[in-house]
Image 1 (cartoon, helix red, strand yellow):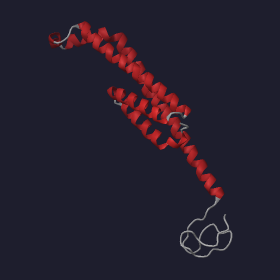
Image 2 (cartoon, helix red, strand yellow):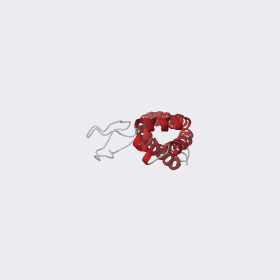
Image 3 (cartoon, helix red, strand yellow):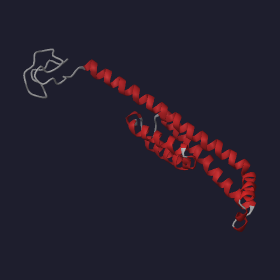
Image 4 (cartoon, rainbow, N blue to C red):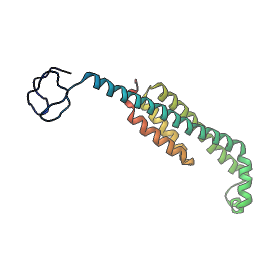
Length: 168
């Protein structure tokens, strides 16, 4: 509690050692209360960083696992697509469709790897802008699963709220 003679809000004179202005009710500087507020805000931001890291890791896992699955089953998926939609023969061959599916799978795996790098940067609280860009890329690639997009967007929102904790 500061020894103020006048309230900084309303200008009325104050008795020494007052925490609140008796005239307007304004709270005066209290170092212990300020420290508590800072500690609570830091704890909330640290929790937000942890949740953002977990969300980014979930998106990365979905992209990597889904990409690996698609890559190794591309031929079977392609054959099944031709069985249920014979008109595909006019545009594709089984091999070309399988190649296209494998390309998409590789994009998903790369997006997952980018998400892993983003999660590492977030967890270490380093290079905020790079962490956000990588998270955006992983979320954009995760749009194919919709849940990946949602996870990525929530993580990005949390990163924007926690920017002061990064040591760029």
